[in-house]
Length: 201
Image 1 (cartoon, helix red, strand yellow):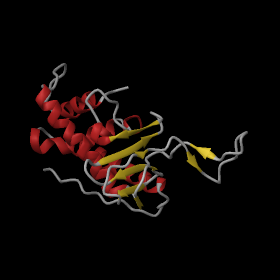
Image 2 (tube, rainbow, N blue to C red):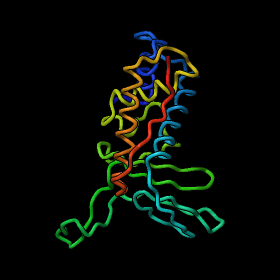
Image 3 (cartoon, one colour):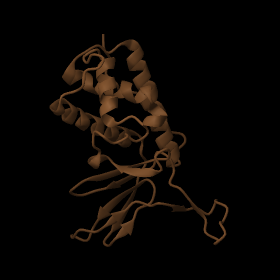
Image 4 (cartoon, one colour):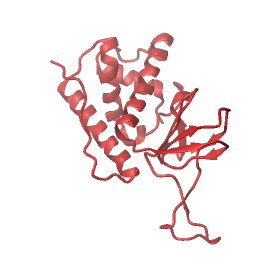
């Protein structure tokens, strides 16, 4: 699977600011990774419908929850491996469990910030704050070139290059589709995502 670094370099090539076979410098890669993280934060801000939960002790979060620690001391917040769901056929033990829903989000407020997203293809939660260049970015299998296009639009103000109408349209389509799927994951199926990409001449 492609890594964060490979997606960033593909985005730079889409902007025509990085040639074929040329790699980002370590400083460019590190700076661009922050843009990658900001992309996830923006998508979550626009698409995730989170339920606020107050905790004062160790807690296993549920899908699409924003967890607040009210204890005044550090507590351990765990992401769920399975979800209890009464609509699921019971297994041999009588348990009604399923994997977390695709595009689910868990946000843990406080310092440090913790933001998790679930990717069914990876079968795992990814903490956005801990994303590194060698990681496979969440939802990249589903988005493909759309993720490249979204990154390109966010990288262009700093690195320059050309945003073509095709690239902009691809980014907008991928973003809107992903936001809608995040809303459906949380049960808000009537959400109509806005398109808030800059317009280029």
